[in-house]
Length: 124
Image (cartoon, rainbow, N blue to C red; front, side, top):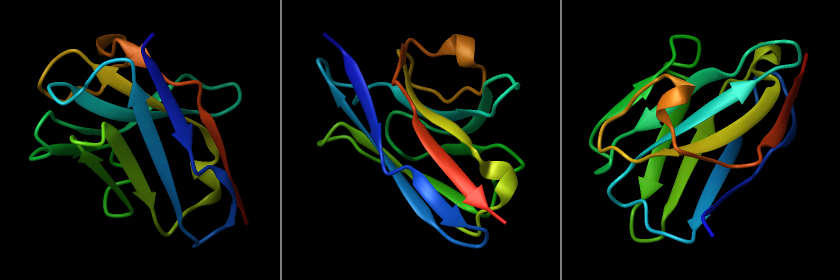
């Protein structure tokens, strides 16, 4: 059974940092692009960041560019999201996703596996 499990969410003050981790099990995703998405109450799920199969290409939403960094460890089957200079508008449930394709993409429909999500709340 394939599982993506996110961890590291929580409550942080504006300007602070959090690091999310996603651990995959059930199959290897070393040949897959990975992504992070988020969904705030009453809003659609939106793209945050993605990384290609090798880790050599990353792609960010404009809203997080320069503040968030995505990285992966192919040997450990994990992907992380370092979030700095956080803002109240970053508050959402954050989801890890895996795409059975080498390259990054920003559309949720392009991803094949999803985690259950982890809550991130940024207080002002």
